[in-house]
Image (tube, rainbow, N blue to C red; front, top):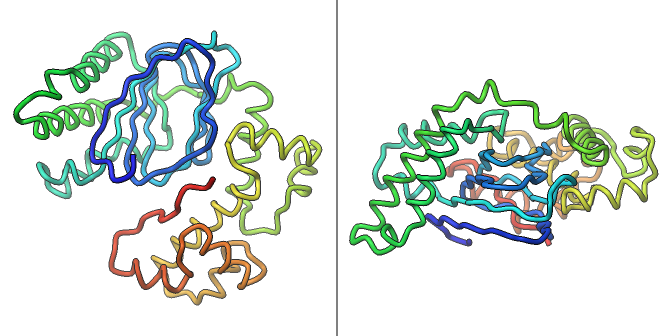
Length: 288
């Protein structure tokens, strides 16, 4: 999906499926679950997603979907991918920003009523239909349908989104708590052993379960969190690199620079210079 401006995909699987790796990308994603239920890991949250749920994944967010325990081994979903450029051809910057606000709520998953499900399924079916694909003004048609989808999304009441964490199984619930702990304490001296002790589980079990749920090792997730924090400081402050290294939780400036380059292909100074006049972005490439 590299460089994608717009795509709508439908997929139905009659067997169990778990996304093998976490991933992130520089386009927005809307995921609609038609049938079945899934666990969805998004950045720092784990959701139990059910039939009729709409999921909003902003660009640069780590995410991964896995089979839920209660799943019968099959599910069907639509996924819409798009970049801001598609909207910028027909809307003003202020209008684009307003339409994308549905991606910036604390809740990333919302359950639709039956009438809302009927509307969204009709709209998604239209977006993927042969009529649209063969339309003489295909690009404009796609833009209009995407705007309609985002207008619908922004009318939803995210403040009333249900609690998607209460029905997580014990393993997912524990990993969810650990993710929250890392996000809160990433500036401290953390290690696999220390976190395992904090949650009264063995380091081996924690390592295995964390990778199983998120697609990342605990160290990869910790570094990802720290580097994103460092990127924000590089873009929004004049703080010296050495101080940013400490603020991000690294004791060694050299180690920080090495990890930063592994994630961004740039040194911290190069990243600051390259993005000083650009809009802030995650800049983190996919880990494999």
